[in-house]
Figure 1 (cartoon, rainbow, N blue to C red):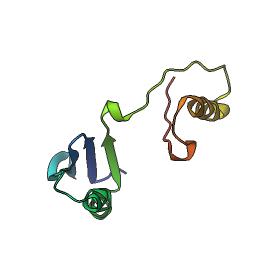
Figure 2: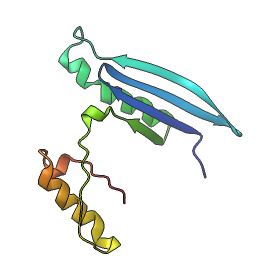
Figure 3: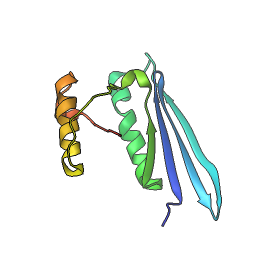
Amino acid sequence: MASDNIIGIVVGKKGWEWTLLSRDKNHWSVSAHEKITDSAEKSENQQKNIPVQLKKTIGRVASYVSLACPSDKLLLRIIEIPKVSDDELEGVVRLQADKFSPFPSDIMVVAFEL
């Protein structure tokens, strides 16, 4: 069963932008759209509350979210790993990511493809 609402979020250098898509039968349309810009005029507390505001809005209208981040905010590496079973693959990738990442493994999101 497909969802009737999907939210797309773009995290940019100057703020956040989100769009709510709603489905009516076989037609999708934009139901809501908002830009939340970061500015020097906003207090640090207000800027920290932007994700909280988004979570409240998203939780009311959609269960699926697509997120886009600027590539300069990502750490992307191509690595070679030994042949392992499918069950072991994720663990091996996480170990390799932990080796080259400057971030603690408990705050990283690791994705991979073959």
